[in-house]
Length: 402
Image (tube, helix red, strand yellow):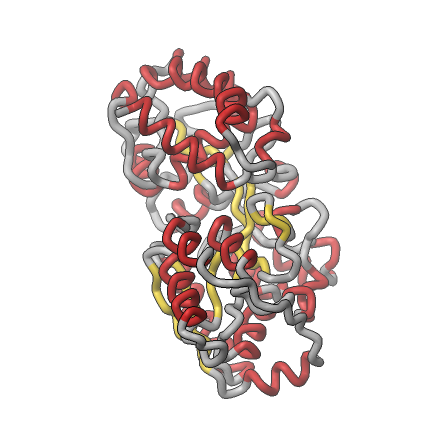
């Protein structure tokens, strides 16, 4: 998914002055009263049918419980919504904007936050904020190295996992580190691949390797310059040069998307596939896209994780309704529904230790699925590098492979 595409939005956003910060301080009861009868235009990437169905379900619940209508404005690229807000700002439309809520991450969030295009801070004023895990899941408060500071509310977690078929590979033989992955590929030529690096999941394949191979991983948390990139990425390119001839089709071709890569796994053409969804195996089994023996594993030194956020533009016409939706997304029952592989299969942003016994049990009940990893197996997610590293990785990979 190209959720983080940003060039158009960032370029446009730099043209406008920063607006004043307006913290949300109204009583929640007043916000809910204001929300009733509003229609929230939720601008969200529409490339995944399960997510689209979840958004539709959210709309049904919001209308039933709070009298709020939700319209999914389906995007091919988040930058479409960013550009619309920028255009309204430039036209002097400081209220009554056409975008109420945006699924936003990374550079798009950075551009809107920096230029004062977001309402808030509001997230910590949501009643369900008290359940959010801000300690072990730091990506809930730091988005691609950018402090969120309440200008967006988390709603689902992603973390790198590797998918395999336990009927073909024994758990003891799985490569649990990036160097071990190279050794495994050399011993099993043609049985590993990754999506093209033009796809975010392919870029993540390289980012995960970079996180383990960089001499100083801390440098990834700062914007990359030429010297830092050359030093940090040098071991990665040595590793990749040895890996590539052992990839599927000798690394001359790559699947275009994550689903295309998963199909290769299901067809038995490869044995290991990367995913950004810990529930990938469980969801795919439920949808008969992978065999019942599909499982996931992570690397011993951890894997990259990030959080999906929703934000409210500064000029949103229906801010109260948008906040009501953001709060609903953080409800323990909503989060458990979203984590259920029968629905969306995304892991929660909540700290289960902050929930009461009944709500905690909702999540514990999901663990009976053998294809789902436990939170303990996933470990603490590694932070995403600054967005500039991904941009440079993609460009360098293109130059090396074409």
